[in-house]
Image 1 (tube, one colour):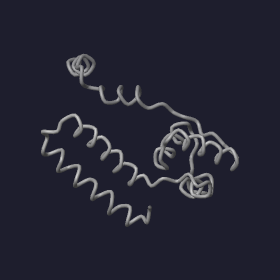
Image 2 (image 1 turned 30 degrees about the vertical axis):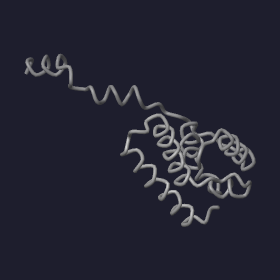
Image 3 (image 1 turned 135 degrees about the vertical axis):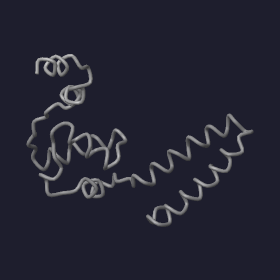
Length: 132
C-alpha cells in the first residue's frame, strides 16, 4: 500500500493533464452590456478587420456572450454596411498569399496551378454569395 502512494506521488505523468488544464483555463466573469454598448463594441472590432466569427470569439474571451443580446453579430454588421463574408475573405487572403509567392518564385509550377484554382474558387464564391 505504501508503494502505491509513493508511486502515485513520484510518477511525473500522473496529474499532468489536470495541471495543464488548471494553467490554461482561466475563469472569465460574464460582463453585462447594454444593446448600444454591445453594438459599439462589435463595430470597434470590425474596424480592426475582424470577421463576424472572430468578433464572437474575442467577445466570449472578454466575458461578453452574444447570445445574451437578441441580435446576431452578422445582422449588426449588415445594418452598418460593414459585413464582409468570412469565407470569401479567407479565400481572397489565401489567393493574395499565393500571388505574392508566385511573383517571387516564377519557376514554381504548382503555385501557378494553385493560383488558377483558387482564383476560380473566388469567382465561384462571389457568384454564390452574389458579391460584385
